[in-house]
Amino acid sequence: MNSIYNSIGGYTPFTTDISDECLTVFAVTMKEFVSVGYKPFAVSTQVVNGINYRFLCTATNTDKEKTTYSVMLSIYKPSSGSSIIKSINEI
Image (cartoon, rainbow, N blue to C red; front, side, top):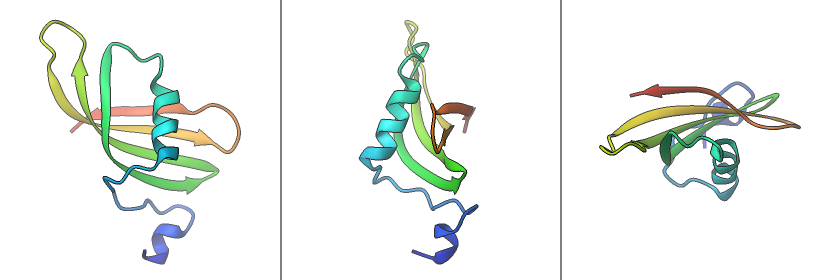
């Protein structure tokens, strides 16, 4: 991997090989988010004072129509403490 991606501040390229650690952060952060179902299919990370995660996801509304669309969902996990959703943007 290129050293720029290993340095603080650089995002890794998106990968579809999502680690168990990334999936755990995603699941814990999203556990109470029930109005839309999100299924990640790729992730990119950035080391800061903690870790920023960018998940590419398939989103499905939980209404009768079950509309699906793609989003980029950003999560911040500090070095200690709980992770938070930073943004959810349709792509």
